[in-house]
Image (cartoon, rainbow, N blue to C red; front, side, top):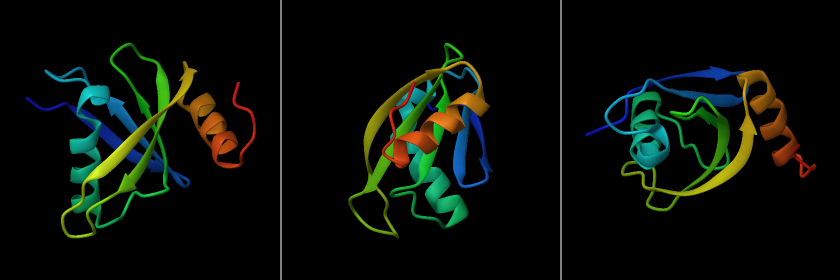
Length: 103
């Protein structure tokens, strides 16, 4: 079972939206990032990433590709943004990467 999701880039932030599939984005994030990496030919290491989970809350993810470009495998760290809108999540992830306190 895989998560159902959509994604887009908003400025320099990857935005992933859970479409309530058989598996949640939160639980399938490694596979999602690997698929996006391969589809878009982009290494997501150090990229700003936010996602809306199955409870409609926005959080962030920090990804570190540990295997390489051709066969990506990401080590994931979750960033608890706990926002209710994508706009607020983007503001908070930008603060996080600027080493500012997130609200």
